[in-house]
Amino acid sequence: HALKGTLQANATTDVWKTAVLYHFVHALALLVLATLPAASRTASGLFVAGIVLFSGSLYLLALTNMKWLGPITPLGGLCFLAGWLFLVIRPPA
Image (tube, rainbow, N blue to C red; front, side, top):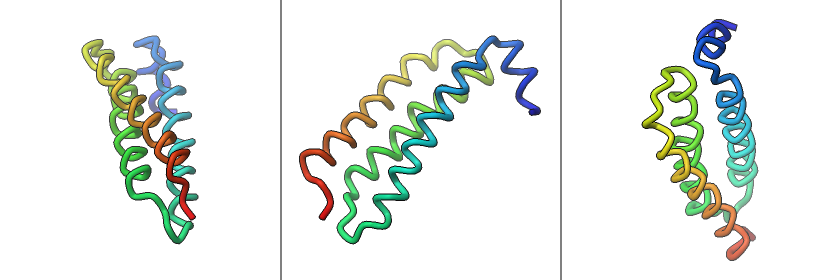
């Protein structure tokens, strides 16, 4: 609730919602991977990097409205894609 004014002033509420969605989905994926005996450390690392780069840059962009953070976001998206691709190629047992 405290962020509402800042997000509305910066017109970045949708940016914040996107960051939260991707953070949530990949945090759940990390929790599932942690329960598997042969969890993929590579995929987990890529998901963590994706959360930091993708969601983190969007959080900062939404709060500060610094447009130069925009080019960082796709790097996080690539980390997410690489993590999912790695799980497809080498699924945990």
